[in-house]
Length: 431
Ligand code: ACO
Image 1 (cartoon, rainbow, N blue to C red):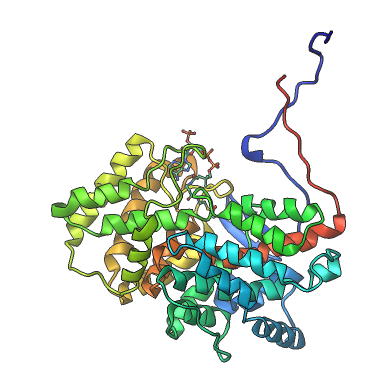
Image 2 (image 1 turned 90 degrees about the vertical axis):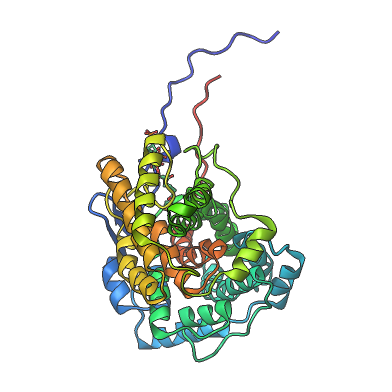
């Protein structure tokens, strides 16, 4: 016969969502959530945004120091050499429905590409170091292909003379972007290149700690990033601002409903399906998007009045605003701050000034009420305001985030491998 339960088992404690837990040491990045500051390998984010490009920042994040001339030449050569991904990785797109979320298509293509890594089963550190340039370059092409697939368009070959950001825009948009557009997109990649041990980075580390390959770790990161509490929030945030920007009082009902559809009940378990704009409508929407300028003149005063009233109402209801709040930042997010002037310039230059005003109105209301609780606009509130005027489809907004932030994941993985300890936390047993 089974004996009685053992009531002497220790009392254990834990932090919900692992909050406050220090997992280990790192030299990759540092976030000061109280001051709203971010450094990559000791360099302030603002300095990198002003003076660097994405390729150089990626080198810095991964290698720990900025490249000298010879290192830069070798890195740049390597990134360009791998711009054409394996044909089978691109071919898999034809089996995927155009209305599957582009981040899922992108992830699926990367799964295939990861199988094409040479010496795949060799997971020693020196073999893993052969992979980052290939992953970055391949995924840029795969990401662009997923975005074009959303519009039913075939992938485009790379252009040799273009840098990483400019070539991505060419392959995604089918036109060479202007210098200002490329710079704005480049800065968006820089600000999203590394962000400490966030949920997706931890996902990647868990996988690498088991002795898996770097491609598998990046895929795990992508799965975690896609959630709407994380990297998926930029799409929802933009849909909210866009819906609010679309109508004056006469159309108040319509755009309120659209904005309401991005509502969730504030818990991870309660979030609605990934995308309010799903199925065939997403593909249709993507085809129609990308034309700069609003299709009709709007009464800005009425739009802003409505946006403010809607925001206040939602604040009363306890709505969880996408693009606001952060586990670490309890003040302004430096990534959002770096992007804001670029977003404003791009939106005004393309006739979307009202979107900028709506962002400002919602942000003002939310921060006035929730700022004292440490809730401010985060990077996901602003990236869409850069991507929309470029002509990227809304459903694709999480993709550039994934493209950029895998840099940090890979750096953390490569830093972690030598310590060699498999990650395996426990849970509190309640019996
Ligand atoms: N809008 C309104 N209230 C919020 C928001 C928000 N965006 N974020 C948090 N809160 C409130 C919660 O309702 C909760 O209130 P309660 O204490 O009265 O229940 C309180 O703040 C704490 O919420 P938690 O979810 O425990 O806070 P956490 O530190 O885990 O939040 C998170 C971080 C998940 C990012 C949250 O702020 C959020 O859901 N934001 C919206 C989604 C989003 O923008 N995600 C992207 C973040 S940036 C990134 O990952 C790249």
